Length: 198
Length: 80
Image 1 (cartoon, chains in turn purple, brown):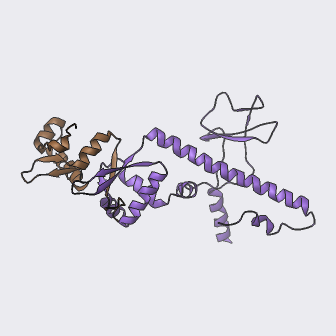
Image 2 (cartoon, helix red, strand yellow):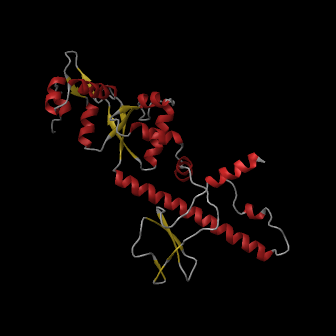
Image 3 (cartoon, helix red, strand yellow):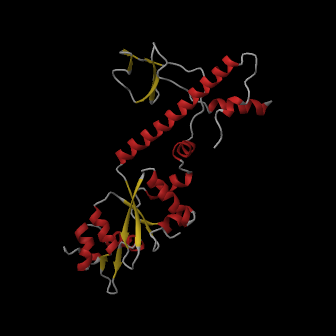
């Protein structure tokens, strides 16, 4: 029983303790429609909908798990821990060769190159192809403007969050529609069938 | 065609660089070693230093902080 209690306590501590007065973000809802919006930072005057100020949500009923930054980067951007490790390894270190990065992190050289290119795809790094003195070319990866990086990662995440929110809405509608059409049946597999795995 | 520093092959010394940058020679040597490892600088047999063609092209880009240099194969793909 002790383990069960510990598990429950652990799960509880892993939940977001939402406090609108101290949170780093605000969630607003419209009093007239189902519009719910997320805003980072304090927004004065408040968000509006139907030409009326939206109301700040003061409490949440559902328990929400605290996000893990590694999982967020992986889920939203497809960027595994290795990609983040590379970013952290090189920030402020001046020029490093790909071999040095690989040795420092204990990754294969091919892994470093793969994730460097992934970071370029994401817009977190820029790549220039320069001539090599002994022939051939050298790929040089350099940082983008930090303000631009902040903007791009935030917008990128909001796009992902919007897609996730749309899926949740779709799930709610799908469930309701099925229940409306089949009032005498339990929720069947058809619910999940409407969200096929890749 | 405009002549570049790379074509002129201008060289300098650690001492001259240290003086120009108001840095100590030991620190500067470490930076030069890092640049050489990344093929951005070359140390001549007489100890004088020059930027490589790659280093000159990089300077011409006037880019933000350079972080990783990854030599590529003949097909332009990175060597792994």
